[in-house]
Image 1 (cartoon, rainbow, N blue to C red):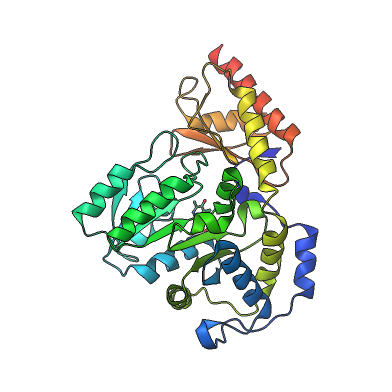
Image 2 (cartoon, protein in one colour; image 1 turned 90 degrees about the horizontal axis):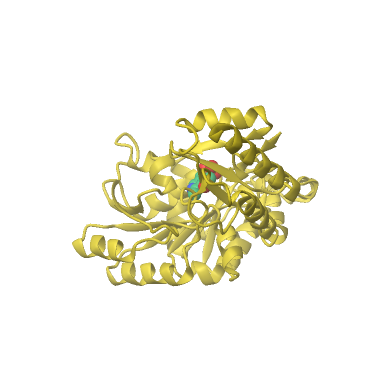
Length: 347
Ligand SMILES: *Cc1c(COP(=O)(O)O)cnc(C)c1O
């Protein structure tokens, strides 16, 4: 079986698991000055994350969803209005921030173009109208087929928002996929946002964890929100050790996943009824098979019978995600199954 449902399926490497055995541990929820805890491995990871992103401080979170939630709550109190991409993960999948029984946030949305670039005029219009407390971007953009928001566009958004006194939060669950695709240092990208989160799980292959980075004061507030959400952890060095390994060894290798996504896409490009949605620039390929079949779920069932596990996204499309452990041969095999399905369903 070739399982391309998500890069959340990556398993830790033996080296990551070995790193846990050697990691010095402590009680990370027993905090001292600047909110730092007593687990030296967590502190080392947070320092490295801050250094890589060029931010003053960082805090380890149990998940990407909690990272987004705590980062937003640190900067916008319940009842605030967030300006989010209309297909942003925290709006469509997470939702908790906008739940009237939980985050009680309001939202306005902006569009992105067919290349996944946020519509600057749309964002400006919302900011000019007033009442926006936080702008949220996603990079790389999951539901836009792994599109990468360009450095120029991100900088323009940051400048616009800054001129209106509004901070920018980046959901960078796959931020390193974006910086590898752009060929730039993460700090260069992160200079254009006030806070960001990235996942240590997913392509970086750590088993658990995400990190929020930002200025000292904001990260202290994120820590307070983490505690409120029940996300403060004790000997969290067991999570931080594989995370450290991931940041030291697994960033550059994301290029292999991008190459496999490209290989897969190139091998189905000529199919007349199977359409690739958007550009393929990172580790995600989204296709539209509505020419072939009404129900994308049924398409996924047919693929599963042939040994390929995939899932619909946004009810209309189907997503293929490439990650460590998926080989080039498997990418080609997945493409062969997509070709078979086209021949069968179009015939
Ligand atoms: C996976 C993901 C998250 C949430 O991460 P979890 O660790 O699964 O909670 C947030 N945003 C985006 C864009 C993601 O892809």
